[in-house]
Structure formats: structure tokens, C-alpha cells
Image (cartoon, rainbow over all chains, first blue to last red; front, side, top):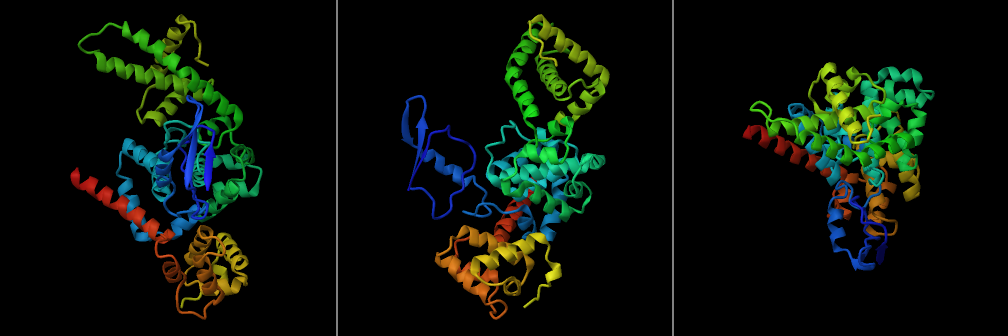
Length: 310
Length: 111
């Protein structure tokens, strides 16, 4: 069987059933306007969820049921000792490799520690994710909502939605599977049925409505220009023994992160932006420092003729 | 063989039993009787979805399920017999956890 692919080669893991596995895969090279054998696609299959070779989709509850409780609790205990960077790194590699159980355990720990799902991934273009990955993303976003926004239950109109926040762990996983409906329900519908606020959608990695997605895309689009402007500004900053290149680089990273946070928390107070910054980086910052740094960022951007501060 | 009570099954398990009954052409009590553990039902669903109707592996497991509790062979053993290369969810989960645990232990030892 021959499979032709004209769209750009996706990094999404492909799942072939034994009977539909192609003999040859062709990819369209837009630069040379020719079809080429894409042997390099084959390794992506190795990255496909390893749990069920060839199967379409398995609810996470099936995987959890299949685990040994003693091993699970031992792993959880050891994960709780991991640092933030290590957790995120392990989550990303497990997510990319389709190790759903490992990704779930890391995700649970990050939720516990107050790291929102939007900061778990390097980029949030997650619409091309595989079915299993999307199921896990939905579960993670809902787990965040359940853990950190329990009062949101009063805003949810539907009984099943309320059960997600108020039910037991098993009820939560069951209702999350129901909400996901094997990938047939788009994320914006889940957002609507859960009456998620804008702030909650910004915290989510996958459950976002179109306006939030567009705003996030706009932020991503202008970020390089903002980075360049801030970099140019700091290049002329006076260096001292206490404020060298390392400190300048740290300042740049901090200002970009604060600018990002100010875009996420629209019209947010410095206190709210500081809280978001802590979620993003794990480092505390005072509201006074936030206000001061953001004033500088805005001044730099205004001087450059750009105003991406809001 | 352990007997699974109908009341022990949640909606996911019931859906799995119902899907299996449709797939192999029998009734849900027979399917539930064939399972030694609740997790066997989900393993059977995953296996059936990985092996299309008409394949030998699908046929072998379907025959086993139709026997209900009139067969000593467990569903997991049947899966292993019909497709030795297939990695069940149970095995895959164990392998994932063991790998992670070994990695974490190694990291702790290195520190």
C-alpha cells in the first residue's frame, strides 16, 4: 500500500495498524516540488504510544488499572523528590515518546506543585497531537482545573461537568473520558461546557477557545521582536563588576518572562503577574519588582515604536 | 477462577463488556464470566482493536471469550498464546514503570 502526504511532515506520532501499515511513505518536498520517499518518517512510529501497538486509542483508566499499585506508589514517592526542571524534562520526553503512564505521573506531580499545563510544553501547537496525546492533554487541563479552581464548580451548568470537579478520582477520570468522547468533541466545546474563564483557558495547554488561541499565537508572533528590542536595550546597559554579562542575560530572560506573563494576565495587577511569573519559572518576585520591570519593558517597546504591552 | 460481580463493574468496564459481546457475537454475562480480573476486559478490548476481525489472533481470543467460564485458560494467557509478539497493556505499563523506577533509583544513587 502507498501513502502520499502533501501536507508538511508532522512531528505527530503516527499509528498504523498491522493491516494498514504502508510499504512506502511519500512526502511532498515543497522546496523542490517533488514527491520523495520519506524513510525518515518511519522512526516517528517508534515514538508512537508504545502501549498498544496498532490500537487506535486506549483510555488512561485502562493503563492505570494495569499497573501494580506498589510500583506506582514507589514511583510517585520518588517523583515527588524531583526538581521542577527535571520534572518538566521528563514530562516532555514521555509525552513525545508516547509513554502515557510516565507522562501522567509527571503531570500529576506538576499539578500538585502548582505548575499550570500551559508551561509544560515548549510550544503549544498541540492540535496535531495524536488521539491518545490529546486525551492526556484534556485530562491534564481538567486535573489542573479540579485541583486549583474547586470554587469554579458553581459556574458549571452541567451535572457531569460538576462531577469532574467534585467527584472522586475514579469519577474524575471517567467523566474526563466522557468529556473527551474519544476525540470527537473539540476542545472549545469542552471549554464551553465547563464554562472556563479566560484565565483558566490561559492556564490550560489544550482546552482553549479560539480567541485565546489567537491571542497566544499573536504573542508568539511578536515575541521575537520584543526579545530583540529588549536585547538591544540591554546591550547598551553599563556593565559593572556586580552586573556583568551573566546578570544581563538573567535580566533579559526575566523581562521577557514578565512580558509573557503580562500578556497572559490581561489587565492584571503586578501581584497577579508576579503569581503567574512564579508559576512559569518557579522563582518568586515582588509586585514592586514586577511593576518596575514592566515599566522598563514598556518604555523600551515605546521607544522602538512598538507597543505590545497589552 | 475468580468470579466478577456485575456490581463491581463501572461504566467503562460495562462498555468494554458490551463492546466485546458485540464483537464476538455473544452476551455480556458470558464475557464477564470469561474474565478473571476486571482489567482483563480492557486488555481484551485493546487486543481486539489491535487485531482486525478475521485475523487468527482475533479469532482465537473470540473463541476463548465465547466459552465464558468453561475454560481454564485466562484471557491474558490466551492473548499471549494467540499473539506472542503482542505487548499487553499490563506488560507495557509494568515495563514503563520499571524503566522509570530504575532511572529514578539510578539518579538517586548518583546524587
